[in-house]
Image (tube, rainbow, N blue to C red; front, side):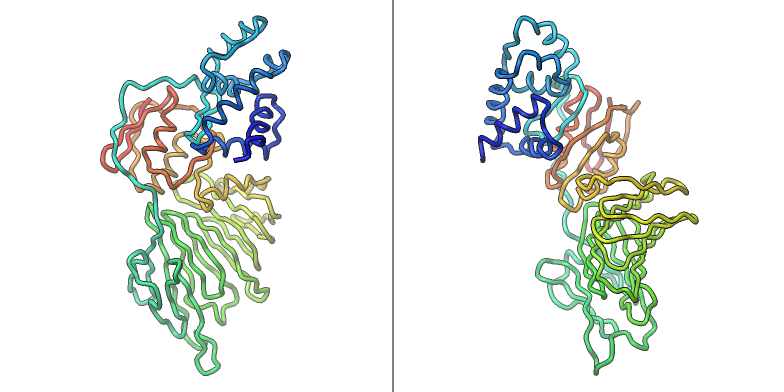
Length: 390
């Protein structure tokens, strides 16, 4: 750990001088349990050296960080009134809990203890359905060749990914002269999987998603796949065969690029995020072309293009939940899909908004404990049901 760097980031945070990148680096440090004590010490030192005129500029969440990490902060007499105001208005900032909750009352211990059940995070797994109806549970399948469809070999590699590869048969292309057949790769709640398609394109499939694709793209005018749910694509370049991702109500057309598509039936929006290359998003007669770093959000019949927050849109593939002004219903839909649990709301829902990042590798108790650090929400686990109440 670079202690000078940690001290610099802490001072920048309290002095309101952090760049966006430095702020994210500081937030990442908060996730490191081993760094917690040193962060507290560095914040304390930065607080004591804060220029007098800057005390009044501290925002609520920065004030909360001070009072949550420093046992008895010394505030100059001139700012003692501000100290009282900060205590009343301070937000919650959880150190070591890996989530920032902005503009919230300070943490108070809940009288009711959450019922503890070990609900582990999702894992690598999926089901492959071949054209002949045969089902292969990929989490159970051994590594090596799984099937052979008209010269297209389907196998599972050492890393557990599904691979489609063309086997030359007497100099002819696999699938030539054959009626094309379709396969379906589906992930249940609590599963995700990676596949290399027959054209060598790579796809990462998120939980509760389905991908339908030809067993061979040979002799087809375009490489068309159908997606329900969310997937990240790295498309192999082929100008003669555009790659098309069809979802409910829209199409994403590319030649070769890296992009993410989220189109769950229980989400209000379909979101396409471009990382590299160029894509065309169309639906209901409207057509938008994206540049790298842009996202297209389809709501109803309209498509709106804006700058993307890649940390947010790519969080699932990087192994994180990322909440940016997120309501509890949206958060719990993500948790439901990843942990394979049912969500039940009791009484009126909180209108609080949540910010921050938390690893998808944590058990559900750890995630819910972090969210419960506000007065606005409480959880109770009953089997694979999560009860949510104020």
